[in-house]
Image 1 (spheres, rainbow, N blue to C red):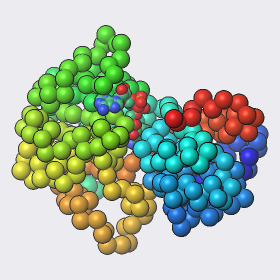
Image 2: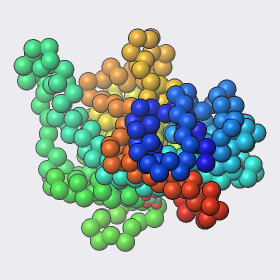
Image 3: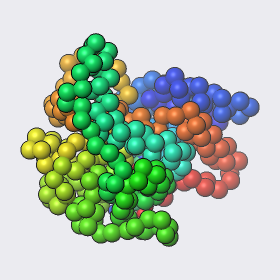
Length: 326
Ligand code: NAI
């Protein structure tokens, strides 16, 4: 099938070309994000392959359908950016990659936590400047701390094991608790009251949008560290900034940001940053931000490409789409 990939980077080209070694499909890699303006570029292709900051609202889906697209293949696990009702109305099946490497995301979560609490981001910048002072770099042990995980799906469960390995007490909250005796489930209130560090691993839905807002923050331990490698809008960013300013939050480690579309994945280093909220966040010494890179390991990229192409092959053969999003 003819597949057009939007927001495609060099690493996508490499992983998809490798996964398509039998040349079963024809791949076109496009740099622009999928939007209403770029949707006509789908013409002449059967499948549109999109990532997390591509726009898949009703208008864009109608445009890609008009351009001849018959399948939407998300090369992500999250599908909060897709208007599924509109896709269904248009008769456009949507597939995703429900699991590629929960280790990639869980390990990045822990990397962010360690960097933040041991101030590695500040130490690295200092040492490069020839400043070998340790003033202001006092961190704390993870051992003996209580970690609260919200969401114990594939990623949350791996994170639970890693934090337990550090000697942390791991508490968890999930709408659908797993039958895993190693995980101690508590109410959200208890998690907020007891955790020294809270990490988010739930999908972004209407229910979880701004899950962490002013009321939730007030229920947390003073000085708690907030970690988000889920989706930006799980946190009310302005409320988080207020709490960081007051010292109510002890720090934040973020791989996602609610207004990341058009910013993350782009090199804006030569431009004036127009997003004042993100600009404020970047001023805190106790905030560390990566630009949605938790998924970015060789293993995860290979799995994403293989699963996506397998879904396209199944679609071409008229076989059931096991990774369809409904
Ligand atoms: P999953 O589907 O395996 O687990 C999600 C868990 O959240 C489930 O156990 C579910 O019961 C729970 N949940 C759903 N709604 C809830 C609610 N309202 N309250 C409490 N629990 C709720 O998903 P997985 O693979 O663990 O991924 C989690 C999220 O991580 C994804 O939805 C995605 O948004 C994000 N993600 C981020 C990546 C990155 O690069 N930063 C990469 C991959 C995923």
